[in-house]
Image 1: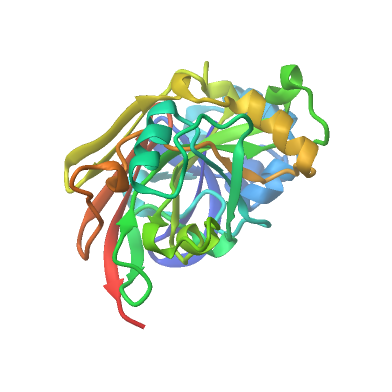
Image 2: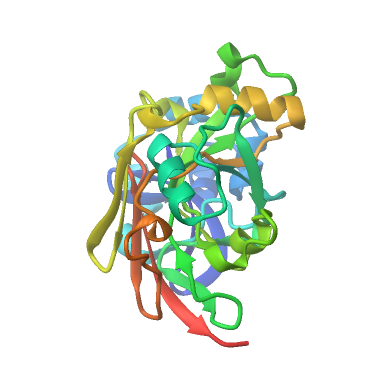
Length: 305
C-alpha cells in the first residue's frame, strides 16, 4: 500500500490514509464502510503488524468502487505530512555507505577514505523530521555549509534483537525517502549529531510504501536536484551494507522496534564533495527522489538566531 499522513486544507488534524487510483482514501473512513475499525495514525498501523496490510489489501479488493468514491479525496485537496511526523525515537543514520561517497568525503571532510568494515551509525532527533513542501531551516549563526543527501529510508515493522541477516526483511514494514540535511561545519571532533540533528534536517516522505509494493529495495534509483539541476544519481544496488546487513548489525547493538527508521546512506554528489564545494542558500529548492516511492521537495529558508 501507498500510505500517507495528511491534513485537509480546511482541517489541520493529521489523518492516516492510503492512495488508491490516484485518490486519497481516509483509513478510518475505510474502516467504517468496511465494519472493521482501523487506526488513525501511522505508528498505530505499524504496531498492528504487517498482517493488517495484507488484510487491508483483501478488503480493498472486495470493496465496491462506488463506496470508495464516497470517501475519496483528490490528491490536490490534501496536504502531505511526513509519513511518521513524530517518530518515537531518533532516526538511525548510516554514514559512508556508498563507495564513491566514501571517496568524496575523504577529499573534503574528516574521514579516512577507507571503506568501513562495519556500518557507521549516527542519529537524528525526532524534531529533525519535516514534510515535503516545507522549509529546511538554515540558521546562519550555526552554519554556512548546508548540504544535501538523498537516502532510502527503511521503516521497521516488528521488534527485533539479534536478527539473522537471512531473516532481516521479515522485520521491514516499508520504505520512504529522507533527505539527510547536513551542516558540514558543525561537526564536533568527529561527532555528527550537531551537524545532522538540527530542526528540519530530515525532510521525509512523501509517502510510506509497504514492502510488498517494492520488488527489490536493492535496485532502486535515487537522485537529487537543487534548483532543477541534478546533483546525485545512483542506485541502491551500490550500498556497501545493504538493508539485511544493517538490520543484522543494528539489532546486535540495540533492540529494533516498530516505527524505527533507518536512513541507509547517501551516494556521491553531495555539495561537500564537489570542486568547488557547493552549499545550500536561502530560496534554494531541493528535490529528493527514490524510485517507487516518490519525490520530496523542500525550500531552504535562512534565519539568524
